[in-house]
Length: 336
Image (cartoon, rainbow, N blue to C red; front, side, top):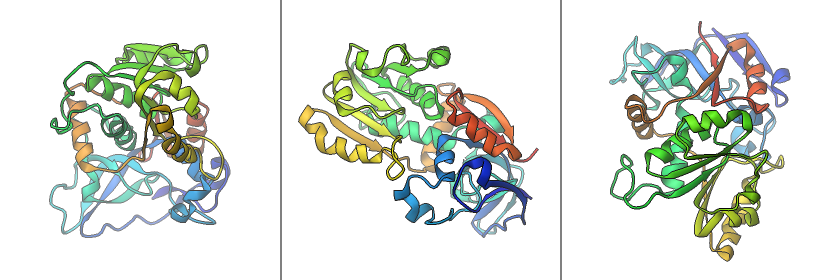
């Protein structure tokens, strides 16, 4: 089978190579999936370069521990292990696994679910990790749900005012939709060319950050979900009400910490400004995937698929995403 391999850290176009390798053999609790598509994100660019350095005990000190990139997928089950009970050959599934930039992947049964009935396999590939991250940022980080709703219904009371930066990206497009679904009044920030997209996803207001940066907004919000850039705590304080919360998702910055160090500074200093900080690192969850599936099938949430690339153009796809022009997500077609 064809796969993208990476045996060293560096620019994707230099270290990602298309090769032929043997198919993986599924274990008794795994299924073998013919991978139809796998999403590409800015995380792939960072991991290709071995960034941030602080993560290398997990990702690999001198070279990637996982030789095949990619972390989520959609595809068709072609073989099921002896202990698999919920999936069978022919099922169209989506979920997460290591090494998805490949024509086939062996995936634990518990990391997959049937794709939403109203999505294609390419659209479904654009869901899992981006949607996990957005859902957990909105529900758990921003706390938009009442404690007794079980994650399915909006909280009672007046709409929370939520500001989302990076609202047109892979995570941001879902965050806008989840926040609206859970009853928030949503303001999304993005560049000029993507304002129509964010408005079309249900944002109540859309702000062009190229003409109106965060510090010039002139109004305040209950929650800031920061998916873009690294605003200072002083800038954050200008746009949040006293007691407001900033939800940090990802970050950019130096090679060592890639912005995660600001989470620690924010958590230490925010109380002095009467703010709360809530860093969010997504947790892979089949329960959340099932929740997201239901929201997609009911029409509450939809993936935004920008472009597809053939597997051989993985490095080009990563460059396209990191150039900042992508609307929503791009995916690789792994098995044509």
